[in-house]
Length: 299
Length: 302
Ligand SMILES: Nc1ncnc2c1ncn2[C@@H]1O[C@H](COP(=O)(O)OP(=O)(O)OP(=O)(O)O)[C@@H](O)[C@H]1O
Ligand SMILES: [Mg+2]
Image 1 (tube, rainbow over the protein chains, first blue to last red):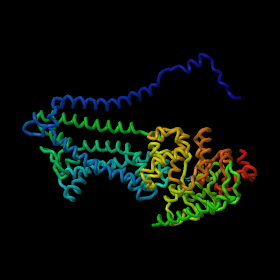
Image 2: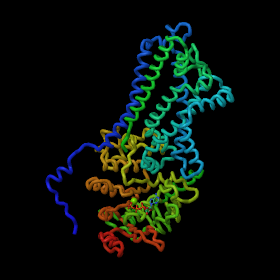
Image 3: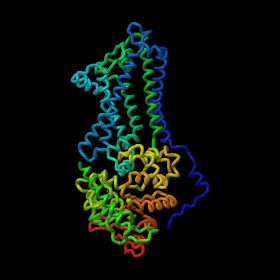
Image 4: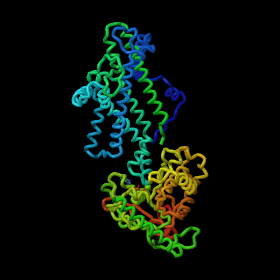
């Protein structure tokens, strides 16, 4: 009853003949590749354009000198570079501990079946997607005005901390969750308290992951101009910040300032500072990737 | 406050236990060693751990139903029985590791030297310091071998200057010292599976517990590593009370003084509950088992 397939030599050869991928398959491949190309070509074009434009001013004067309206040929961006460093370091100091603590609570103490914890969780996901300008409005209304901190480094750092906090929390949670339960169980079975287990086992094991996430979050913050402009950051500053209550400018704002000048020299300066900013971002991201690969653990 | 109370209470208990041992030293109830002369008595006198009408639940599901089981001091008690009959569940109730599982709940009394460890004033941390646990899958910490061992003593606040001694002593007792003494700085995770498991045992004895629970400690090991761990268990049973879960009948027969046989019973609603079927000296269990136990140990189960 059962049909037995009896192959006849030529028939099999014909059946198995490779006629190349079907037309539809090939079509899709080209479409997908075209999509990829648009992204890559745009990026490369952008980089080449910026590089050619800014290259002549990519000299030490860029970070040695202060901005100047009257002498573009001597102008630099030292105040903006130092401002960026001040703001980013302060942001890190604020958002790292807060973010990691929130992540520890959610992962180690939170209970996903409890309504409150679920609501917090969903909100953090949503906050990560809120446009940065909205944080600028919040920072202006609450930090700059209600707390009367004005247009200072600390205002900027607090606002940027709020902006990147959700990302820090989410990535820290992932790092903490990646520590296997068996490590926690092993520690608790030795009579360690919950806090000792977190402090001595879970956190050390998740530090690389937390650091990676934090660096990526900070690299977002360092490129932000919109919320700081909204906060009323002064666009023309010729001195370095000397404290948290100092006025400041940052690299993206300096770029914005130069771009909006009409003289050609300033366009070149803006491009040069863009290159510097991109280089810093590249270094930060490379370091994050390095950290991730170096400490990647197979449990 | 509460913690202090428990500590004091337990210290007293420990003292009395030690005194008891001295008295028993010349007596007839010394635990049966394979090499020993005396045979353990059938009745467990003065149990270290005594389960009375213990039920364990996961939410509404009763995984273990009404177990009465005494654990004799400085003996090895083995839990055997088919998969899913609640051996691990019951074992975790010995040191309150069930607390970590949301929804898990224990009813009945788990008496440790007469103190109910599920009593209202009992600190689970203090319980776990006295009742250690070795897991089925070796779980060394991602730290150096030295730090793996030193972790427990450090957590208990032992002073730094004792640490070298504790580490060497624990590793020696766990029959691992010779293999790792030249690489104490290397990661514990770089050891072989059998070495990792002995590291976990060393880690456990470094805090000098009263009881050591082992949940299928040889499940992921080859026969040679298994033999090493079995020797080690016999060795440790001189000083510690050991409770071991195993699927290996020969292992139970080889190492255990007493054996508890569990099985899963199906109730009216077609729900399976773990029950204790038989508990006796190992030789009696293997020589004259009851029917269901016999089916299981002779491989005719099912
Ligand atoms: N965390 C848990 N949550 C809910 N139910 C569980 C949990 N752990 C175990 N159970 C259930 O409890 C019962 C007993 O499980 P347990 O792990 O104690 O069995 P076991 O005898 O150790 O089995 P094995 O020999 O396979 O390890 C099983 O029906 C299992 O499904
Ligand atoms: Mg089990």
